Structures are given as structure tokens and as C-alpha cells.
Image (cartoon, rainbow, N blue to C red; front, side):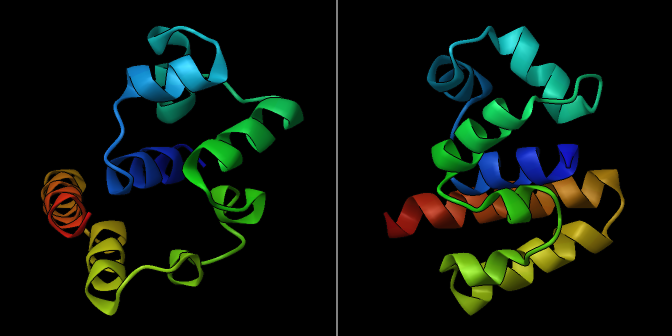
Length: 104
């Protein structure tokens, strides 16, 4: 789930601080969810899904992001990021974030 949190946060063009503010926690606390060092409660998981406008199933890896209204290009970038090593994944996510910023 931690990779999903970072992935969707970058896709949405949000900072860790922005998400932490929405969840009423510190950026350090939220960062621990992204790194997998902490596991959110069910209530917090629901708040995260609301924050990112995705389903809890998506955050838990039970639903693909393409169902969340991304373009085929964005979906392809997300798929490439999932398959890549850490550096390539970061590059793909940054490219996706830049693309998302251009179309909004």
C-alpha cells in the first residue's frame, strides 16, 4: 500500500505536507505511511482515499488506477512506474506529475 500512496500523491501533484494537513497529522507521520513504517487505521485509510479521490480498494491494491479516470498515457506511465526499478520509477512518476500539471 505504501507505494500506492506515493504514486497517487505524485499523480495528484500533492506534497506530503498537503496530504498531512488534510489528514490532520504531521508530514513526518504521513511519510511513515508512504514508507511502510506505519499502517493507517481504517478511518485514516478512508480519509486518505477521500483526499486522493480514489477508492480504498485502489489504495489496498485491489483496483487498478485506470478506473480512476486517467488518460491512456497517464495509465501507461503508471504501469511503467510499477514495473521499473526505484530510479526509473521515480523518473516515470515525475514525468506523470509534470504531465498532470500541464493538463489541469
